[in-house]
Length: 247
Image (tube, rainbow, N blue to C red; front, side):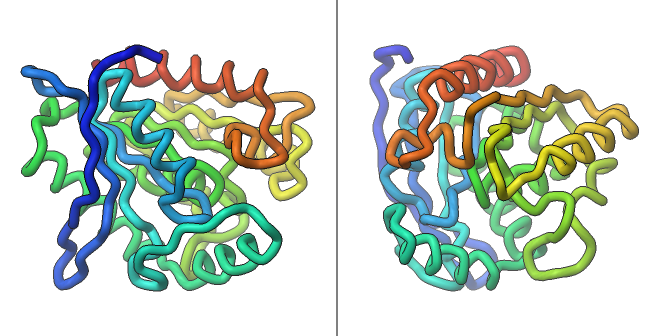
């Protein structure tokens, strides 16, 4: 991580009549910077997601984390107890892909209209539920690079029902990196293989990273499943991806 000076703030993004809270981190710079949209786990835009957002800003990106649960639970942030997981999953099950994509597009429009973002240089990154959301977001024309961490359910469902998210693989516009722990019971290896096969079928630029001994949530240093070796390598890959595609 660099020592680049940054500034942070909570901002409001407007999507029709909905005001979406978002955590924004911006490098202090005289030049436009690439943008990265950060997607939360089921635990809201909590300390971990805010930390990721700041880390990206220190690397030279305008990073913004919109609240994906704005409709269900404004201001929701929580930790990682079993009760927290239960509540977070309840809110996740109330989300809809069409609404989420609309909120993401509104976030992109905010970056383009309200920040000194570099034209045509926007990527996204997501974890857990946000990893699934990142796969959806990769289909938007503005998203040039995507980093999806352990997004469960990509092959079996989509937020709000309808056909599984994997069916939109052909619509991914840019390059996508995916990160999975091989001890993650919520994402069987067969599902990882299926995702990779679809990316290859539609000739989507991609890399799939499989970490032996890593469990779900391996990147989050607030969780018991944190795996330092896997997390450090994954972050190195993310930095390389965004540097080559966005800077």
